[in-house]
Each structure stands twice: as structure tokens, then as C-alpha cells.
Amino acid sequence: MTEPDGTDLIPAPRRLVRNGSGRGRLDEGTRLVAGPGTEGVARWLRATVGAATGYALTAGGGESVCRLVLSIEPGLPSEGYRVVTGGADHLIQGGSAAGVFWGAQTFRQLLGPDAHRRAPLRPGQDRDLPEVTVEDAPRFAWRGLMLDVARHFLPKDQVLRYLDLMAAHKLNVLHFHLTDDQGWRIEIERYPRLTEVGSWRARTKFGHRASPLWEEKPHGGHYTRDDLREIVAYAAERHITVVPEIDIPGHSQAAIAAYPELGNTDVVDTASLTVWDTWGINENVLAPTDHTLRFYEGVLEEVLELFPSTFVHIGGDECVKDQWKRSATAQARIREFGLTDEEGLQSWFVRHFDNWLTARGRRLIGWDEILQGGLAPGAAVSSWRGYAGGVTAARAGHDVVMCPEQHVYLDHRQHDGPDEPVPIGYVRTLEDVFRFEPVPPELTPEEARHVLGTQANVWTEVMEDPARVDYQAFPRLAAFAEVAWSRLPAPAERDFADFERRMTSHYRRLDALGVGYRPPGGPRPWQRRPGVLGRPIEGVPPNV
Ligand code: ACM
Image 1 (cartoon, rainbow, N blue to C red):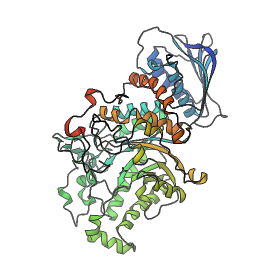
Image 2 (image 1 turned 30 degrees about the horizontal axis):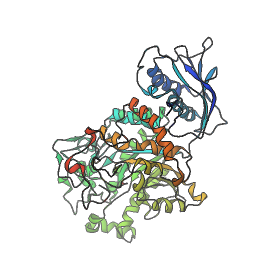
Image 3 (image 1 turned 120 degrees about the vertical axis):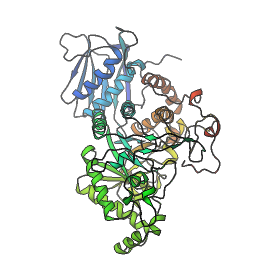
Image 4 (image 1 turned 90 degrees about the vertical axis):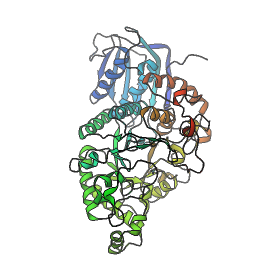
């Protein structure tokens, strides 16, 4: 087998042609010429490729033997790019700054795995790269990763690291799952108890829901407003949009523990509730009162200040209605609004915030349960319980992000072997993810236009630390990135052997980036979980 020459790109580009059989060069004299609008990409190149090579990549270029020239070319698709290497100049051109940035990612891959390190291995070493032209553009506008930082808190540095890893895979939406029963992670100035009380739990279930193990120490943490400003700015520099999720009306026990009046006080002693310390679907949901609406409007006002994204995710999933059935207050609201049942209360919550966000120039997105009861025209749906919600939404004219749990829930096991750590959910191998198709065949081309894109979801119940997140996310996120970016044939016709061949280069990039992925042969010894955590639990449904 020949040594990879840097053209084993992931995700696969639309077109790659060789301009010659020689090698282009990058060396100490290489100058970086940043055209208007590409200054941010130049900064990124100096901080990454500059650090990995030890070259200053200084501006200008009159006398230099070799230049790297960045430019925006309006004729290219908005996020599309063209990279030309090996001539007098290396060129990275994009239809927008984002396109130039994705081109810069390709340029780094062409330079080889060591261009992904943070310092040069050998000072003064020249770099070469294949002489090629790459022309490329993404299939989908929404190429997302959902990170659940509520079940296990992910320190800020790790979030920034994940933004770098997303950028390296040309992913451009971080769906940031900031609140849940087990923790509230975003500082809200006017409601300090949300983080003082709601961001800590006394102990944690270790492993899946049926595990008998607990970690008997407090777990928690939150991001300050400045942390979040930094995360949003860091993402923006990488052309990634951060979509915040504040989950209502279910998945709210942490908020109720902080402010008991948010719960159904006429049926539960909410003052004695604590931040939840185990996994599953929780019956402590928000009370359908005007007070709750005003409270969450206050939360969202601060969310809008911090997050400029058009979309704001309001959760809406898995809201158990038992307390509303028993609550006189909830039943009175059902009568007052002329609703038929408790499902109508859920729609009432969603419609309220749909209107509220729309009035502020934003758009609501929620899990597919929000379809029950009708949505305002601008609202969008994350289709997670399979494709059906997304199909219904697209047919009704709503935009959709496809993330069916059967395919792209990366907490689910990636092999059925006995060594797989905490083997929950469906078996989804690297090949399964590679063959995932976000647009189901039953949609007409007109309906399919509502599929904005797709995202992989990383729920962290069984990922107690960043190493476990890496293990579950990688290498499958590389396959997912190819699905989201590249124009692949129908699932059965996709060339998995070619993908695996390119992955041999990509594993070396991931090594250089310091990613603790699952190796193709199975977990490394320290990635295994012996005993009860190493076995699927009989009778536990796929969802933890
Ligand atoms: C979900 O997995 N409950 C959206």
C-alpha cells in the first residue's frame, strides 16, 4: 500500500484533481496574503498551521518565494471553496469568509497529520503538500453536533476544544443542551439560584439507569455569562453558530429545585426537591402558570443577549403529564383555555414561546413532540424519535433538522462486542453512521427542501468525563461529518471501503489533535468498563 499523500480528505470533497505529480511547499518564507473579509481565517491559520509548523506566516509577500493567498470570490457557493496548491501561490478561495474557512480546513488536511499538532515536531522542517485543485461545497446548511452539558458538566475548555474538533470536520452548528433535570448550566443574572442551587447535584448515578453504582460526590458546574460570550465568539470565529437549548416544560427538575414555585406545588412538595441524581424521564415538570411564563421570559431575555443565533431551542421533549392530570391548577387552565386535555397545555407552552421568540426576530426550534398541537409557521423541529416527526413537519411546511435516535445518537454503543463500555441503546457502528441518510425517500423534492440538515446528538448520562465523550463521539463524528457535508450516493451504494481507507489518514489527524477515539479494533484497555458497566442490561429499553 502506498503512503497516504494528504489527499485522503474527510469529509470527502466534491472534486479533487491533481495539478501535477510534484509537491507544493510551505516554508519559513511563506507569506500569508489575506484578502478583504478573510482576516479571521488568516488569524486561525496562524494560530493552528502556524503553531504546528513554527512558521510565522507573516502578512505581505512581495519578495517571498511562496505565498498563501486567501480571497472571497463571489462566484463560488456561499460556504463553498476552491483550494489550489503547488503553483507560485497557494490559493484558498471561498464564496464567503465561511467558505474560505472550510477551505483552510482542507488546506490543513493536505499538509498532513502533523499540521494538526500545536507545535512543530522538528524545528525548521519544511512542509510539502500535494499539487491539487479541490472544489467543494456542503450538502446541508445545518451540520450539527448536540452536546449535553447538563447530565455531565463539560468544562469550558472542553467546549472550546469541541468547537475546534467540529471546525476540523466542517460542522457548523453547536446545539448546546444547557438545562435538564440533572443540572442548570447557564448563569442567569436575575435568577441566581438557577446556578447556585440548580447546577449541583449531591451525587451521580454512575453508568446507565439500571446500574447499581453511584459516584458519592457532588457533581456540577456552570458557565458564566462571560464564559458563554467567549464560547459564542470562539464559535463565530470558526463559522459555527451556537444554538442554546433551555428545556421546557419537561426536563426541568433542576430549575424547580432552585425555584420551587415553578413546579406543580398543589400536587408535589416541590420545596423538598433536589437536583436529580439519576437518569430517565422525570415527572417533575413546570406548572402551567403565568408565573412560569414570566420567569422563562426572563431567562430567555438573557439567553437572547448572549446568543445571537436565529434559532433558540426550547426542548419540549418527554414532558410527562401525570402531575398536570392531578393538579387542580393545571386542570383549571385546561378549562380556562378550552383545551381538550393535558397535551393542549404542552402546546400552550410551546406556542407562547414560539410567539415570544418570533416577536423578537428569532425562531423557535424544539424536539419533535412540539408538533402536537400545531406550530407557528417559522418554528422548526429536531426529529429525534425517528424520521416520522421530521416528515410530518416538512409536509406541513416546517423546517427540520434530522437527528433520529436510531441512527445518530452517539451515546449509543458502537459495536456489539463484549468490551464495549456502558453499552446502551442501539448498536450503531461507524459504517451504520456512514450509511445514515438525513432525507427520507418519502419526501418530495419540494418537501425535502425543508430539511435544513442534520445533527449528531451526544447525550452524556454515561459519559462522566471528556475521555468518554471522545470515545463515543469519535470516530463516528467523522462519518457523520461526511454525511452532513458530502454529496454521497444512496446508503447502500456508499463506498465504505474508500471511507475506511481515508480514515487511516484521519486517525493520524485525530491522534495529532489528541482525540481519544474508539480504535477500529475495539476499545483500548483503559476505555473498557468491566463488570456491570460492560454488559447491556436486560429489559432496559434503548434509551438509557
Ligand atoms: C431526546 O432524546 N429526549 C430528545
